[in-house]
Image (tube, rainbow, N blue to C red):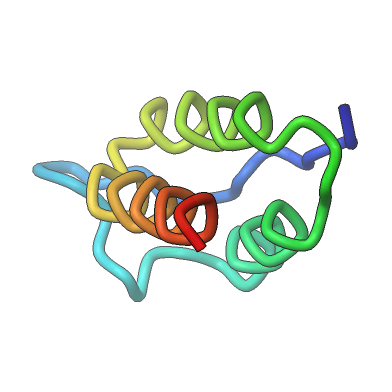
Length: 73
């Protein structure tokens, strides 16, 4: 499995993180996940767990949707 750095998302006091709370490193990790052919379901799960720690539900749904769309094509 490829090394995925932990996502750095500012914690939200209420509700899920907003898109502006995500840092560039988080988006780079998403791009790397899509480029890797090595065990993508596990990588998606690791990103899911890291984002849930910070309350980024919107980002989690986005990652899962992108993963499902890429798997379907």
